[in-house]
Image (tube, rainbow, N blue to C red; front, side):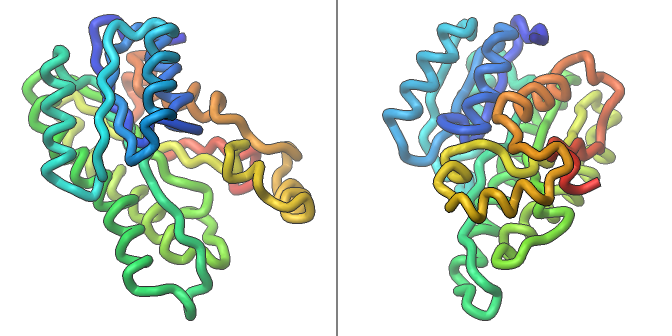
Length: 248
């Protein structure tokens, strides 16, 4: 557990899976939260209650599409109204899997707009308040696929690889203002998506992981919470892999 007392965190894609685990880790450190979600009201409300029970003094739900610049700015404004914006976690993302020759141009563009564009809009909106308070930590969720590629995920991999370059550039731009920017690259994590995989596909996946198991959302969240905390005060521009050795 890390101490986020008196701090405000905004987590995109925070209603389920890895995003919810990250929100709960920050809540356990007493951070106030703005939780973004795209559409599942029931999951968002459940996440809010869990975060409050975990220790978050205040939790605000923010339903919006991160591909909208105006919506991202409004969410940042809501965070600032709670007392500032000290931590930004860009977790929202989508994957529309398809072989390149069959991938529709609109599906390519949608993934760019959400995964890469959404992070751009959020970071741009967050920069001004973080600069004013001369402090901030930004953590972007990339993926093992962004480093090693994956058949059927050319668009998704491109967005996640783009996030790595974006993270390093932002880290260089904002370091002089005491704002850190890092990325976490999860491997295959035990979530609703991976639980639905056929057993044969699951076993094939495990063969490529030296630790021979899927990761947990909590393991990713612990890494994000560390990067967001003052314990990582001399870490910026890094990509930390949480992938069981799948890609080294």
